[in-house]
Length: 271
Ligand SMILES: [Zn+2]
Ligand SMILES: [Zn+2]
Image (cartoon, rainbow, N blue to C red):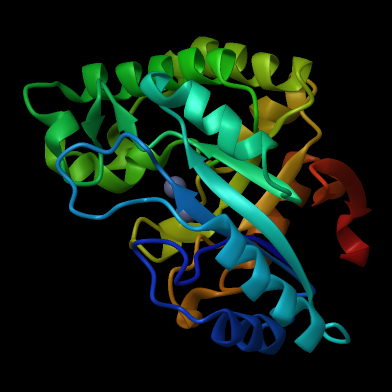
């Protein structure tokens, strides 16, 4: 298995040591781990600074790569928070440093945070969900310097702010927007990830879940990774098996790995 979404202490919201993540990964049967540290250059009303020193990060990862060489492949990666105010800085960061793999994620919509609930104030459930998907659609067309779109349907984690559950949402109403988003990704050799953090947040589903994975497959999607989004060692490698199971159910025969931001397709049964 490959855990393609892990945050170490180089991310502002994690304290996990690289070694602890690697030991947990090996114990969970993971063969490859990507340290996808946060950069999120526009993040209002938040005390954390989502940025890291690339040189320090690269040096630390290289030490770990050497230490774990026989047991685990360790990749340099980043999770870029996409926002129109920061497209240029994000592009510069992505292209002036070496990365094996880049996730592009949308953590805000309407310039407001989903996580702290600001985004949901004065919105109905439908407005919140539609604006969320339209925002992602716009952003992936404007900013292309990443390999997979992170945690599509992240909004499911925060629907308690509008007193709803994700099962209440008529997701099909947004399939046109989502299909268009998938096509924009596919045309530019990008893909999506299956993010297993939903199980940690007690919503018991992958982000995105099976119907979206089927839709992605139906419109020709091939590039797809699976990651835990672990911020502590307890979650490294956790639920990845469920993610691969979903890929199989959606009709995927391969999962994607990356080197130097180039995709490689590995049969799911040989992972
Ligand atoms: Zn994220
Ligand atoms: Zn993340």
